Amino acid sequence: MGRYALLPLRFFLGITFVYAGLDKLTDPAFLASDGQGSIGALMESVRDTAALPGLVDLALKSPAGFGYAIAFGELAVGLGTLLGFFARIAAAGGALISLSLWLTVSWAATPYYYGNDLVYLMAWLPLILAGAPLLSADAALAGRRRGRARGGVPLSRVAQVARRGR
Image (cartoon, rainbow, N blue to C red):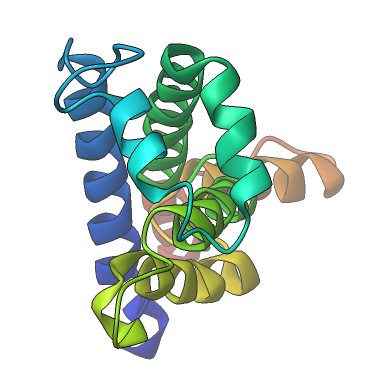
């Protein structure tokens, strides 16, 4: 049972990041450079309280471009996590997004545990360490590689059970 322990975390983070990416991509106000609800207005509002104001300044050079980058990054991280495809890389991407948002957008949250980006950053760490060894594209590809390394075609689970039954 312990081998399934990370699945709820993986599915939660994957679904949340897919949702966050799609939410941003379908919200024209968010992807604008300025105006209420825009990424530009958000970045302007956190500029003076961010731990790394230089990072905010970089985003303000092209707020819409930064908004698209974050949205597509969240979508890629979420899909990679859900499918377990390059799962450790996807988790590292999720951690990087969460870290950058923590150091900019939610840095001023007081007390610190009110800022959800820090919690997301910590939640990505077990998936960076463990990857997605179950119910994942990575596991399927690893199984195929093991089968090729033995010099044969990998058998399906049903074929393996049937072969042992003879």
